Length: 187
Image (cartoon, rainbow, N blue to C red; front, side, top):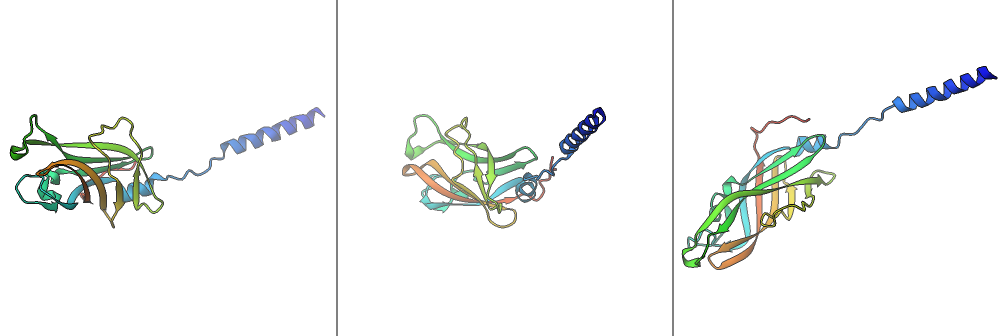
């Protein structure tokens, strides 16, 4: 009887050990996202919902690259690794100088930005930013972010900008293309 108890104990122990050692293969959900999205993207176009005169040259345009000084320096950086997915948008923000007079407006433009963790849809066609409670309200996140073919991202963003007619809320659609010289490794 004692012999059977040892055999049963040994079998039970062996079974528990074998089950605990058996690891299920983990699926790496970030690798396809890294392969499709990771990189630095440069702005190639930006158009507003209607014409505005932001650079105060007397001519209104929907082409925001010509209206917002240095907007061509705007970029997106997407970092994807095994633990995180981070979307950063750096945009040229307009600051009004003290005692503004619209007839002789003086503005500063600084490259500022936001970073957020993100999720994607199943087809990796849309990026959904997670709320960042510590985010400065001056630097708003895009309303929507979508891929537009290989290496191209389109964002829709709303900006409060001073124009020749006063402060306006402007809807801008911007297209970014991935910098092919940007190289990184998946870790």
